Length: 187
Image 1 (cartoon, rainbow, N blue to C red):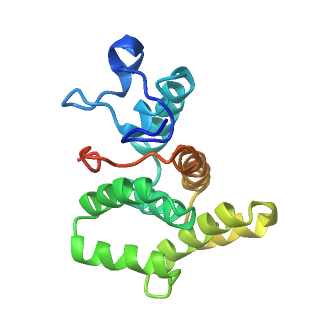
Image 2 (cartoon, helix red, strand yellow):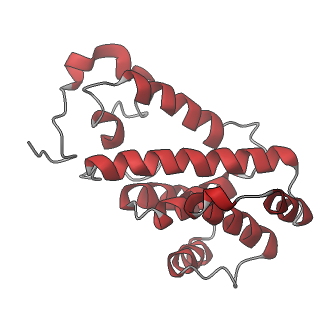
């Protein structure tokens, strides 16, 4: 059966009960992404905690806008509109310059990193390689990030952001999860 948010049946939130409480937004709503996993919610609840620790920890080594931009690129590469739209909006909010931010997102869609600042470009190139050719990763990829000025904590977070969004975009695409009428972005 197909419904409005995904290709599988979604259990009413009252049946799921308090298992969705940690996933609720400030307005009490639950993203369609999480609602799509109402048939078996425990793993996605745990995965959300992991995601929040990677992306929204105040102690995260990377600037939040850069982590969001990296997540947007993974979503673009994996052709996941849901994640690209949500995290694109988060990036634009955090970056602070919507016009320049939109130009950056359009460059990512074209696969054109030339106009980006070198340090940002190097991180995105690393993330793109990890997303598309993980089996080819080598010590040289880490060395290139260090040479661009990234420390090991930032590199660790970049790997986790990239891998996490590979996971999320595959979940979203596998079930055909749609935005519907939900609020876009975190902010």
